[in-house]
Length: 280
Image 1 (tube, one colour):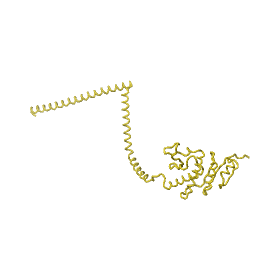
Image 2: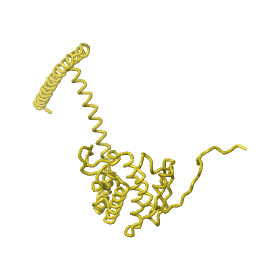
Image 3: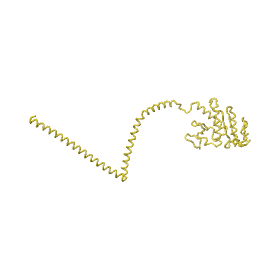
Image 4: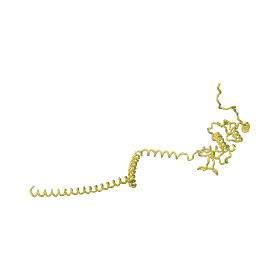
């Protein structure tokens, strides 16, 4: 290159260097600005840290609450992240359970709407009639026989719409709580005998074994007339084997009155059934 070309080349190099220097200066200014901003933030954080330390040491309630809130939020975020992970992990199982639930709901929809089938309702109605008839025969007086019914929920005797008595949430009360001791025994007789009578009904043909055992049915000062009515009904059931253990107040007159015109077989033990063996 001649002299002019060398001069022009050097001028171009100088211009390029000037532009680079200007760029470096701009970068330096940006770095200085960032450094200044970081210094300002660092100073603010330092001041905040000093303030927090002071609050903790002096017991400042608001700042402590903020710290607790921050810790709580971080803990909740971790829990939510874990829940999200578990949801994605268990989602296939939930989809399978949802399909099973849909199938089960379909099966449940096909079940009968009533608790009992029609023939079961008829059996309960027959049982209720026998129970009422027996209670009337035995001299039950604690309530009107017309008010006595068999609960469809528990299949036990209940009274409905009884005034001046404690009524439960279904306006019903357990007869046991509203009967005298002897009347409650009459209800037991009525219930046990009605079970057999219903089972023996030709429209029911149940599975009763045909055996009924009663131990001291005359307890609680039971009237002799009631015991007599019980023995008469037991004797009138040809398919029922009734075994009654009774002392009749250890009075022959009570025994005679209670068994009058009743067909039965008497077995007398003559002594206590439970006694020590004689030692030879």
